[in-house]
Structures are given as C-alpha cells and as structure tokens.
Amino acid sequence: MLPKPSLVLQVKLLPEDYSEAQAAEIKRSYMYLAQSVVSELPEDERAEGNLMRLNVRLMKPYWNPADDGAQKLWGESFMPWLANAVRNMSTAMHNFNTVLHPLGSGNVAYEWADFDFAPNAVLRVKMDEENRIPSAAPAFCDKVRSLCAEGVLGEDVVRVRIPSLASLEAQKAAYEEELRQFREARAAEEAVACALDADADPEAVADATEFEAPADAESAAEAVEAVMDWGDAGADEVATDEAEPAPAADEPVATAASEPVFTLDYAIWGIEKADGTVVELDSRTL
Image 1 (cartoon, rainbow, N blue to C red):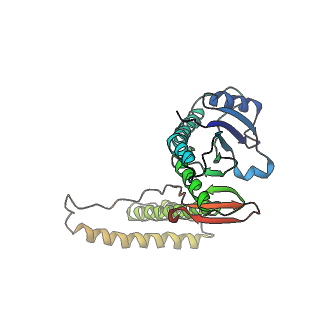
Image 2 (image 1 turned 90 degrees about the vertical axis):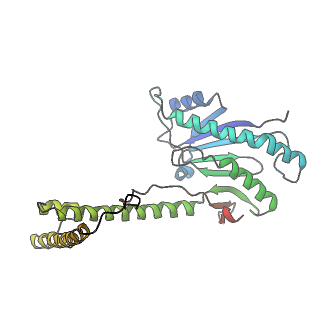
Image 3 (image 1 turned 180 degrees about the horizontal axis):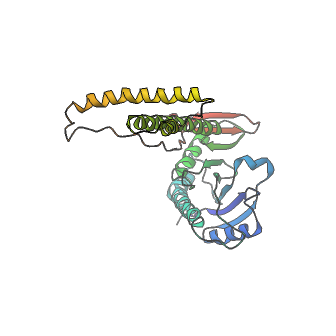
C-alpha cells in the first residue's frame, strides 16, 4: 500500500477575529481532520485576511514527475488524498459557520487557503463565493508541480497566488461597474413604468429615477417634466405595440435581466518572487 501524506492546519486570524476561546473552538472543530495551530495574523499580513494553511508533508519523494516512483506516488496516493482533504476541509469550514459556538467565539470567513508543499512550492488559493476551498484546488496543485518541473515558473518563487491580486481587483472592479449599470437601468425602467401611469404622482416619478434631489423648485419641475415626456414617448410605443399580434407560444419572450452575480475566475496566476516582483501567467495557455 502506498503511503499517504500527513496534514497540519495553521490558521491565522485577524486580530478582531482572534481570541483564546476562538482558537480553542477551531482546534476542537477540526481535530478529526488534522492537528491545528491557531495564531493571530501578523500586522504586515493583515491585508491578506483570515488564512487557512494546509501544511502537507510526505517522507518520500513525490514532487518530481520524471521520477517513476514519485510519479506513481503522486498519481495513485497523493492526488486522491488531496482531493479528499479539500472536500473534507470545505465541509468542515461550512459546518463551523452553521452551528452555535461557546461564548467568546464565532464564525470565521477565510480569504485564502494555502497549500504548503515545503520545500517544493506554496500555493495561495482564493476561497470561492461560498467561502469554501475551490474544488479545482487539487488540479491547481497538480499543474504547479508540472510547471515547476518544466522550469516555467522560474527561480526564487515565494508563492503562486491563484488568482493574482491584480486579476482579483480587476474582476471586482468589473463586477461593481456591471452592478452599477444594472441598477441604473433598473431605475430607468421603474421611472418609465411610473411615468406611463396616468395617475402617477410627480414626486414618485422623481423618486423612481434615484437621482439626487434638484437644487430648486424650477429644476425639480424640469426633471419631472422630462421623465413624463419620456413616459409619453413610451406610451406611444406601447399603443403601437398593442396593435401588433401577440407572439406565438413558441416564440421567446423578453424578460428583465437578472442582477449580476460575481463569479470568481481563477485563470490568471500571480507568480510572486522573493524580490517582491510578480509575474502573471494565464493558466489556460500553459
């Protein structure tokens, strides 16, 4: 039977989330999976947020794909074990945040999960939208192992961050812009619907636009008049549409767009070097 790795959890919490009671509760909750070490996040790492680190160790060679024994151990023992460990860890993290805790401890939202394969490589993977370790994490580890063997990552690599910080910030900015446009469009739709109502209250029409209140009465009257004019134009279109035959049952009917949902993309990786430089790689092309 092939040997399996051992696992030690190293949890680092923000000062506001750390307490002796919290540390004891985390150790108790994860003891069936692995030994846990819980500490307060150093001030210079505060920007990283709460961190769950999986220290993975195996006292046999497993990292070099060119070694037949290491490759067999990796494929037949290490990878299945890692997939199972990630699944169990994600379940434990979810369960921890769905139960009542003793006084002095509470739920924990983690930002990143580290996979420490010292002395070979360290991966830092962003938690998914449900605050779990992404199920693709073992595949990321497998890919990093291959890239290390091929020399693609270069020298003096401190960490492989998935996704890179720049990619993460760009994704967040794009989502915020998409959300802003959606809400503006929804406000405009509501303003038109309100203006089309013959009994509409002008103040309600103005409120529906979600615009800032005009500085004076004259400006307010102009704003409401503009929306009402817009509504009259929409009413003309509605009257025209009413004269047209209804769409057939099998024809698609347009519906209002749903509010956008943020979906994290892990494609762009950040290769963080010892000198502080970061090289970004598109994992889809490697």
